[in-house]
Length: 339
Picture 1 (cartoon, rainbow, N blue to C red):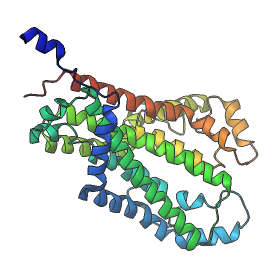
Picture 2 (tube, rainbow, N blue to C red):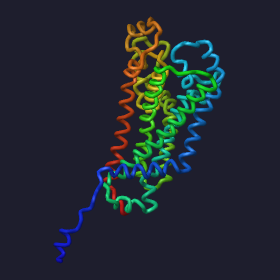
Picture 3 (tube, rainbow, N blue to C red):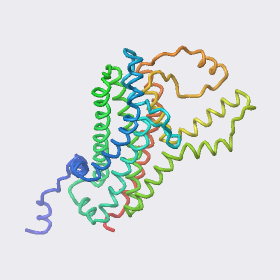
Picture 4 (cartoon, one colour):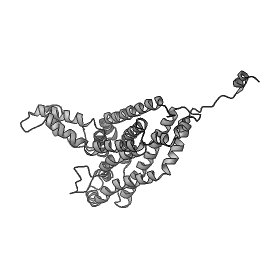
């Protein structure tokens, strides 16, 4: 048999269409069995549990005072302890989850690609009968699934605490609000996961990628608003002598700049979804709108009305995730994996 005939009769190499599922399944199993998974679960559980424990008495008092009112169960997530202040941060369950949850995204992704490269397993991985992009797609999906599992465990733990310790039973409307808030929280963490994956692609050393990732998280989550408020106060200050129309314009400018931070987007979206009494996130643009806002009768928004308010925030978080993932995807597809 000639060489040409041998090549013609050789079986074609099978490339499964769902190669990313194979990679994702293997990566997910590695994540949930790793020490990192349990450490992060404990860290996030403590981050959510400590403010809840400190606010127990206050929530219990408020629950007894407003027994029968709507959205009492959601108070578990938005009420913090009194007379406790930590660097001006929001000391509530939603505040601490917003602060600590990005760690999950960075911790599960900072060594996703450069770790394989450092161990010399990346060439063998891409040599498998799968498409090359199945590797990065599968790693992203697996990390997001592991993060979802961690967050779901923490939310169920908090809900169980409210049911057993405080005797607060959620209404169906509150359950649906929690589900939507949970999805938005996943979208928020996905931004940091895509950012960590991007670092793992463009930075060849895992330790360097981790330092950059955690440094950016600390700079944005802990000091971002403080630095931006400082700069805005110097560039466009609002004083007592500022005219009301000009002051409203400056406040809108400040709000726009602060919303460039993903932490601000998530904080505003989370507050509106967990607190149906919040009827807006924007500063009134004119004196007439300010007067209307002051004369507004307090009421509770339905879930679809709250979702309508935070829809731009959700779209912005998804867009940030797509941008970070797309840059990492393109860089990974162009890289030489044999080096």
